[in-house]
Length: 81
Image (cartoon, rainbow, N blue to C red; front, top):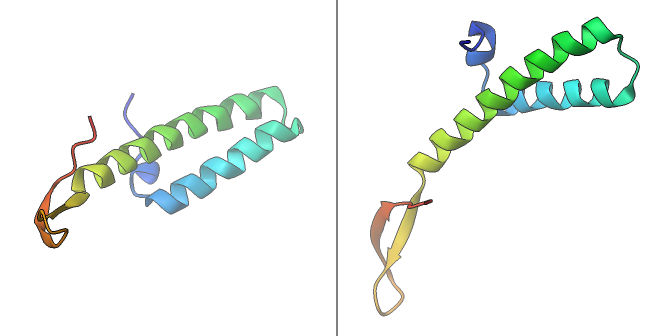
C-alpha cells in the first residue's frame, strides 16, 4: 500500500507531531473501536513516513575527516552500517 499523498507531503516534524497526537489519543482509551482502528492505520503510515525521512537524513550526513594532527581536512559519507 502506498503512502497517502497528504502524508507524503509532510515534513518530519509535522508528521511526528501528528503521530504523537495519535499515540496520546490511543493511550487515553477514550476513542471508540472504529476510530481507534482508523487512527492506528494513519499512525502506522506516519511512522513509516518518519522512518523514511530519517533514513534520507542519515544518507546525507557526512562525517568530518581529521588529519593525524587532529585538524579537519575534509568530509566523507557517513557509514551507518
